[in-house]
Image (cartoon, rainbow, N blue to C red; front, side, top):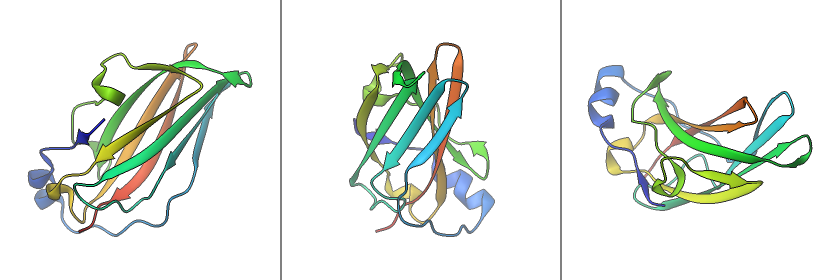
Length: 135
C-alpha cells in the first residue's frame, strides 16, 4: 500500500514548530486477552519513500482474527481521515500483516503520531508511533 497523508500543510502552519523523533522500536499494547505490537522500520522516514511496518495481534496467546485501521494525529488531533491497510475499508488479518506507508513532502519535519487501531473479540488496542519525516 502506498499511503499518502494529505492536507497537513495548513494544520502544520497553524500549530508551529515540532521536535524530531528517535530510532525505531517495537510498540506494544494490550486490552484484556488481546495483545498487539507495531514494528516500524524507522521513526524518521524519508519523504516520498516507502516505510515498512509490521503489526502482530494475539488473543489468549494465539493469532487473533482482527481488524486494523490507521489514524494520523498532530498535536493530539486527528489530521487525516482514517486510512486502512491495502486501501481496504474493512481490513482484517489473522496474526500479523505488513504494510508500507509513504509520507508526502507536506509532512516534512512535522512530528505526527501514526496510531494503528487493532480490534478483535470486543477489545481495542491503540498502538501510537511518533513519526517525523525528513528529506
